[in-house]
Length: 204
Ligand code: GAR
Image (cartoon, rainbow, N blue to C red; front, side):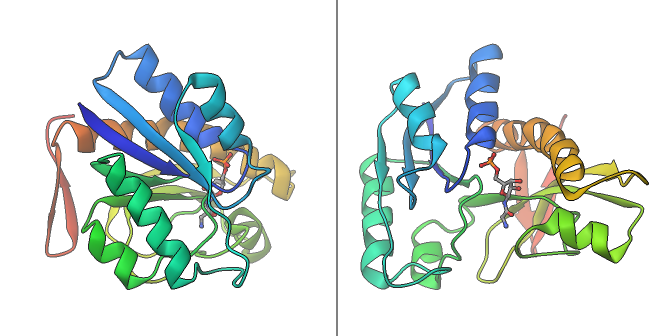
């Protein structure tokens, strides 16, 4: 069975969307483990409710990175659970090269903008402040850097005159909940290949 591990820091709506989609479509995908750096993360409660192994691995020394020792704990747990794919779902830490090398092109992320525009925090607010007419969300393979790596799927969201940061983020998240589960499915079905850092998708 294709096994995923999900890393999340926040409210866990993308984790929930992935789990719901797997159930609805009866996909042969197992969620082996949910890990969080934040004991308050709702993702841990979602995992508990679904009977999925879950664990908080906190990081005390850094705010945006994980120290080497903490990264090791994440890697060890993901390996123990034999995950085929690591899904970052609002995991607000930048992974270092050692972590990435353990899972070459096997870590994916969702970001709330049309990358490469607006990497980093509160991307919906960056888009609103910049004044773009369209923004959206992106799934991508993770490489070293902030929200960089070969792009898999994108969805476009128009920016409306009356948008507030909250209303825009809400509409972006509706699209995230479509493209992230679909991305996981396509990878599990072997329909995604990377060639010279470009992603090719077959038969959808
Ligand atoms: C999502 O909007 C995701 O795109 C964003 O965090 C939110 C998590 O929501 N990720 C990033 O900004 C990564 N740079 P969730 O906890 O409800 O899934």
